[in-house]
Length: 171
Ligand code: GTP
Ligand code: MG
Image 1 (cartoon, rainbow, N blue to C red):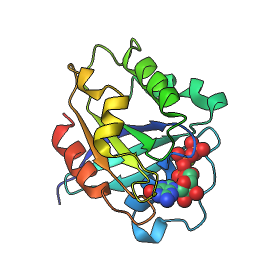
Image 2 (image 1 turned 90 degrees about the vertical axis):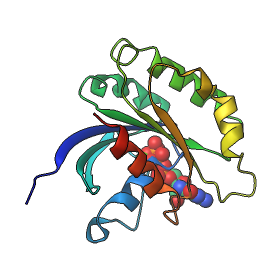
Image 3 (image 1 turned 135 degrees about the horizontal axis):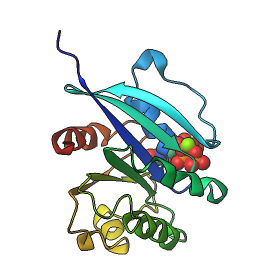
Image 4 (image 1 turned 30 degrees about the vertical axis):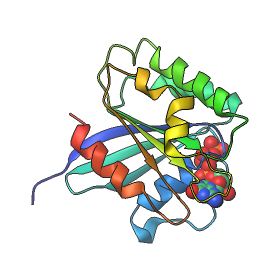
């Protein structure tokens, strides 16, 4: 059969936002893990959509590891940026990291797609997708295709909508 096109995706966001839980849900069920622990450094994971074969760099969001992120910008074809919708206190930190990312020399000149997951939408205190978009000033991103999905990574809700969008926007 036809070989799927191989693409590299970088999964970013603060620690505890749910990056590894999201990537784990997207993997084939026989390779999913039950116990997810905070990521040290990063992990490389693979999953497929109908037309693409994804290699995901699942980065640690802990502050001490965030300096690793930029080393993978050049080789990435898209970014997944995960936000904990319930973490109001750290939304400004998430915005700072997003702004730093978008202003980086290896990112700012490229039209690479950015998919946002407003994750943990199941939490009682979760902010709406609209609220998260406003706090991150997403409407200011004019030079890249971007999309935001509400998600519940524990149940796997909202994830495939995001992957479908990515598949349609990766060149
Ligand atoms: P680092 O690797 O430290 O950067 O964190 P991470 O972004 O990979 O977060 P991880 O996937 O390890 O999830 C952190 C915690 O949030 C875990 O206890 C998850 O079970 C939980 N979690 C992830 N997604 C959701 C969600 O959608 N809803 C709820 N309620 N909890 C979630
Ligand atoms: Mg992780």
